[in-house]
Amino acid sequence: MVRKARHNSQAISPTLIAFGNQVRYYRERMKLSQDRLGERFPVSGSYIGQIEVGKTRCTEEFAQQLDELVGADGCLARLWKDLVQDAAYPTWFDWPAIERDAAMLQTFQISVVYGLLQTPDYAMALLEDKAAVEARMARQGILLREDPTPPSLAVLLDEAVLHREVGDHRVMREQLEHLIEVQGRRLTVQVVPCAVHEGLSGSFVLATMADRSEVAYVETAIRGLTMAGIGDMAKLSESLCSLRANAYSVRESMEIIRRVVTERWT
Image 1 (tube, rainbow, N blue to C red):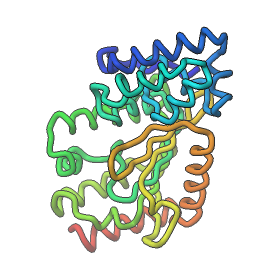
Image 2 (image 1 turned 90 degrees about the horizontal axis):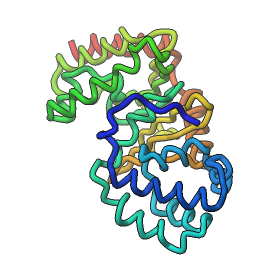
Image 3 (image 1 turned 90 degrees about the vertical axis):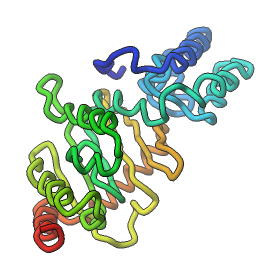
Image 4 (image 1 turned 180 degrees about the horizontal axis):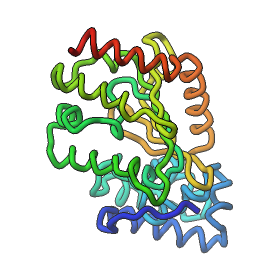
């Protein structure tokens, strides 16, 4: 089981909790453990657990498959539309709790700097909302905590991110200098050359949990999606391997970032 994140229970949508309670009811009625139920999709048992406590939302397709597997006679499929589709919190809200519990985070970003590495001014230029920026800065606290150990973080940035103006020259210069400063043993940043590559379909984050299960956050044109299907995880892992194989080394990436700071943003 994934360790529960330390967070205010009010931050979880009550409608997601209600849906999760029904999932638990039907699972237990079938006398299945979370792991045994997960094997039938297949997903990890920890993902089933996250649904049951309201920490993440599943897709409508997943709810329909779940309904059939536990013999809910359409109940879970109907509840998904009533409780999950229009839950009180936005679709991406479940991700910070997963992020906090992760042992390792790997991400590819095609358009902007990864949220956990954004400076306040860069985030403000993107979000244009003080409360949203404060929430994003608070999320970055997981990289500085002492207990539990911070997750290791590997960031792959499309080279175009270094040249895309967010805010103004000062904001960009400070942001790129920040990427150089945070580089370390448990946090690496690599630049992926501007070319046709595995990441052109969009940005994504792959979280590896303490029990070695994986959960992903994938950005789409409409909304962000949290997923944990084994097939999806395999595809994203393959994409990461391909992107990393074509990326500049960490040392080369730092030199490129420094050059862009000097030649474009100073």
